[in-house]
Image (tube, rainbow, N blue to C red; front, side, top):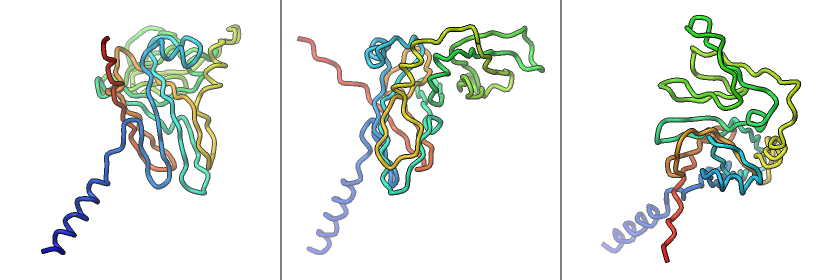
Length: 218
């Protein structure tokens, strides 16, 4: 009987030790991710020191390799997904947000439409009305052709230098790497609606977020 109780307690202790990752954290034997998400435009402006504009969320990301082998880190490793409406996008490069190139959207040859629309913002479309393509990230909508056309006469956007200075570095490293990830998200969104999927050399991980606690009124 005593032996049975010892085994039961040991099993219960082991079960309790398998806790669900905390919001903003995920990891495995090869890497640990710690992140926070910023959805408020004014808060993003405070972090960047410049106004990114509407239609974006920003994530602070720290990537800590856990092996002796250098880990390759790329912006394409990170995809944000909204559980609210299905929006998704890979992390944008600074040049896709504030570069000289403009994203030109044109109907495909077999689709009705005119000459198309030029825009510097993200393209929304894709399967089921969701999915995002911007810059060199291709659209998932087969009815749309996209390409980036350079604007030789355009002046450098001061925001580009800010975004480049703070973005998560793309590199191979055995040391922790920190920086910002920029994602296009349309409409009002809360942190709890978002999750970042990491899919890179270290496997696949999901980082979920929670809304900050509400401040008590005096």
